[in-house]
Image (cartoon, rainbow, N blue to C red; front, side, top):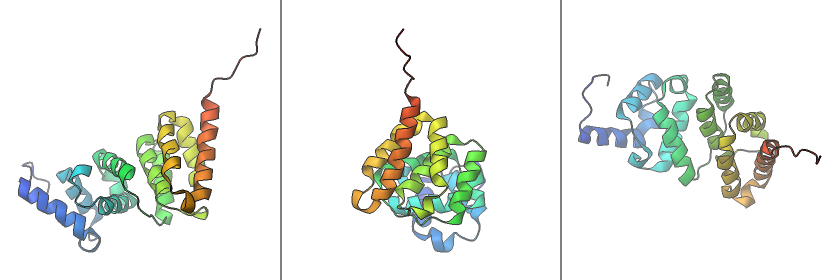
Length: 188
């Protein structure tokens, strides 16, 4: 995997299919080897055979210590792109908060934005989002350019399933939007 010559197109396509279809069973042996393999292949969102499987794969890889530390930023962008077009359900795990805190501590705001979009759009429960709300607020205050992405997310979450979540996320977005407005100076 670490040799310089690129994979042949046929080997690359076979690798993409293999990862896409068998990663949960066959590739759990070594997280670091999986990350190296992914980084070497440089697979894009357009290469994904099944978008939902790629979302799950990337989330699982990011949850691993090796993935969080070593996964190419290219895959963070791919995940971000896939999250726009594909609905999925994510059961939050303890590790998800650890990923969030690690990205926050490292001030990896772009990656944290992608991670928080994944968390909010993955159908969490109100109880499982404890702690994620305050980090979302901090993220949006530090990186206001991400605000439209979260406002769009408020519009795309299914109303019937996510009313409480939509309300919480909308409150966060409204608070950030209000803090962005220039304070009006009193008339002279």
